[in-house]
Length: 99
Image 1 (cartoon, rainbow, N blue to C red):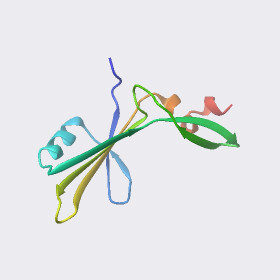
Image 2: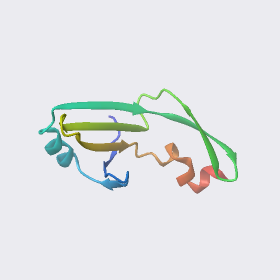
Image 3: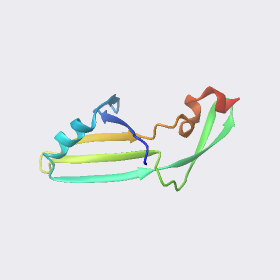
């Protein structure tokens, strides 16, 4: 079974606000067009808490990005991100990975 991703609404300042599947579904019901893509990385510690990322293929991606176009002419968008729940995917957040 695929993991349950952590969902976020991304505001105009690119701040990620936790959200729900229902909020994504409600926003999607108003869509003119949607763009979705995923990204995965392989992280390498390059210095004292300095990380270098390389793109990598993973069956369950690290991040999924969804852009919902609400009004094409008015440039109205809603952005959502979904992050994989495994903390090892985000090594700088896991102190045991850096030691």
